[in-house]
Image (tube, rainbow, N blue to C red; front, side):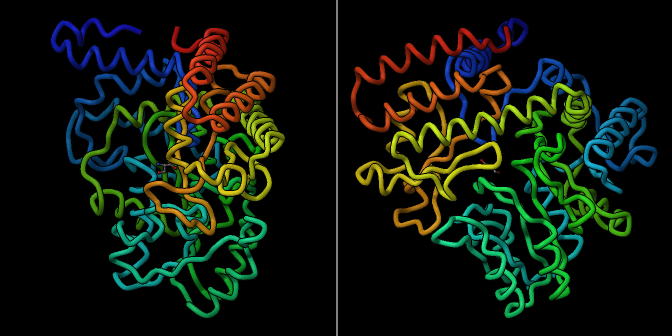
Length: 415
Ligand code: DSN
């Protein structure tokens, strides 16, 4: 993957692009929300559709010359509908947060009430954090996981909902390693007359492949991002029942966004086609299997896993018991110096700060894309343990870098 054409105009950017490609090839990407898209998705995203304005929707645009934009967007919609079985799909949100914004803007008035999971317990900024527009425009209360088990506390949620009487309950999480009981949350919403938004950003690929239960057809709205487990390139998606279709479409455009990023929609269309193939189901199954192997390996090395394990693509490690002197940030830095890239993360009952929290979040989507199997992943778990056990040891870092290089060579990427 060279960038000769860019280099002929802009040496500095070409260097950075090539540096990034080398970084992705030669180090382990274990940020749970990242993945490696196919070259076909990269090609579509880097296409001439970046030149095209296409405000509106297929067949009803505000600009001429949209025949190919229409074709691409229709394909993305058709394929997403087939993947998720949704009545209505809007593929224009620029990100998962913009998808959530469309739901809030179409259904809520400023001051309305949102009930969502606390960020420290696995929620997301766009679910009502004070630093986000959601926390500023709406009245927000947050539910939590059970502090003992790390699992969602559905009874606690029901009690909280009865007391708070929210207008919308948000489910779907960014650092929750377990299956979600969508129907239970829907019953809670029904009981209090609230809408239900299920944000499946992290598990979009697992849901599409049928390896995690789907909220489509249960929750009123399902949002997601398209670059995580589903590896269809950067962007968002929103799905709903037909009765909400016009409101959602109007909230995406013109309500919240300008022209659609048609090149990204082309990437989504290609990625969704890939996700419809049988190989994608096998990929999603292996991603979950690898996360299990990773969790088991870390547990065998004395690490404490929030909820005791995982049902999906990520494990959340609470370092406080096993490594009280090592913060999540220390672990992130030490691992990055050993060519293993992941992120420090808050954990339930957080006692440090969001800037240097007590845990790390570790995901398997990207490693699985490049071909890592259970044995490779077990080895990665052992390497992570080795580094965190001796976070400042240069000799350990150097050994681990050599092992990472060998694993990367055995599982090549973007050859
Ligand atoms: N930044 C994403 C994540 O890492 O979970 C969510 O938007």
